[in-house]
Length: 383
Image (tube, rainbow, N blue to C red; front, side, top):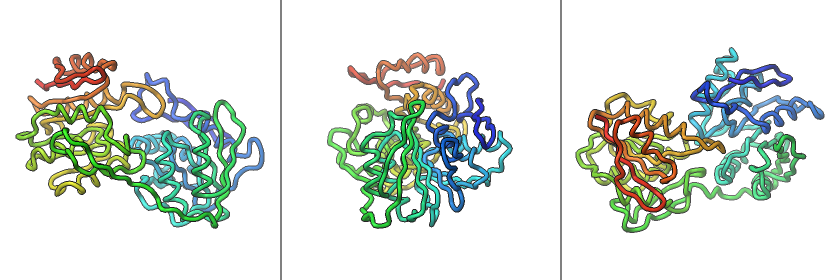
């Protein structure tokens, strides 16, 4: 845990799940720059009366520091919500000081201050600005924040096109602010999200099926090559009572399992609310939803031990912009705990990540079920 010092006080903050060995902080220079601006350190303070909305707060640092204004946090991340709860608690702030909302929830009817941590992808920003635009007014204070590598001309153009005139601040510690003046005369355009596309042939049960992608979900316009390779090399599904699509994204892998055996219970798990909405929409577009379940969670943390026959996953190897295998390691450990004896974990991954080493250490076995020059499909069995 590190401590963020502001004119509002000092706050102990950590990422979630907390790992004492993790050198990464729960905030960055963009958060500090935004808080300095609000506090008037370099000019006049910004009034925070009315409804304050914070979009994209990474680990709850902003809403924790602004908790006395009872902000609304809007996030796509289950982990962000859990980090926010933990950070409020460790600073002895009541949880109800912050209203926790997902990007799929209706926003507050009127927004007087809108603070935006620019997300990694423009798609999610575009979707959220469209969702929030009807709820801002001419007097709404809108300030965005991001590292200079996250703010591009296209970022500013989105603010201009959807909300109103936009300018940026000078850079400070490689961070920059965005100032947007909402203009009620800006034409209201249709939100282009979610999007759909048709899967190609030659990939088993899901060939030619429809995929629904909400903004921010991986590969929104086409099937990525890793998932395609996995679909071409899935294990037999029939007879597996409970299958988990872990880190499900738009749900294509889990859909393949559901179509292969209509009697199987298929659980779709992701920490992204946009991804879960995509997966549910994809399943509904192609089959009777049956016994499918959709769970926001940190890996397999919400699944009882010894209740799963097969886990299928394409684990991420980064968190925001930090490259790390910590998420994959938690997914592998959680899978082992959730699997029944004889249950299997199947993983598709880039060859260079070397996940076979971790899986052998954890399961005592791991075999390569399929490979090509870029990807491997690995199989580990719980003995």
